[in-house]
Length: 113
Ligand code: DGP
Image (cartoon, rainbow, N blue to C red; front, side, top):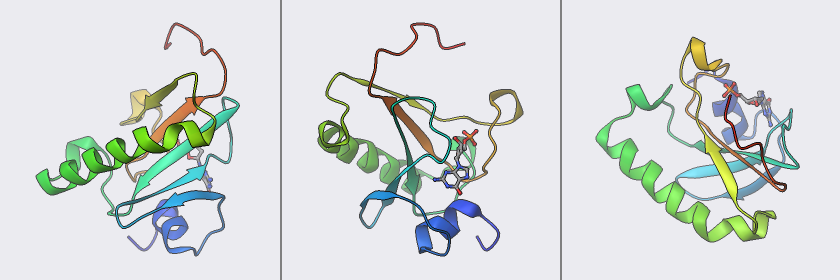
């Protein structure tokens, strides 16, 4: 999508710290980290959130999460991590391209909100 900031990051039109890339996704560092390790998993296909996800995109996302499980230790997440995907105004979603926050690198708060 031409005006989507994450599509531009995926295409390399906006710089980012890219830690991983394959045919399905990129994993980058979040520009405003909220934990010692704060990464974003960006599926390469543009869809705004899980409500807009097709069955095929759901399969791709499943592959991405499976791959993440193999990569996590290499990202400094040996102690565990939290996955968050904000959807809509109440969740304060600010970028309308589905993304999974990957948070860790310390003991996280035991309450989500
Ligand atoms: P959300 O609120 O779930 O839509 O989070 C969007 C996240 O994206 C937020 O943590 C900041 C991050 N972000 C926004 N713009 C950029 C950018 O240009 N580069 C990087 N690396 N992260 C960005």
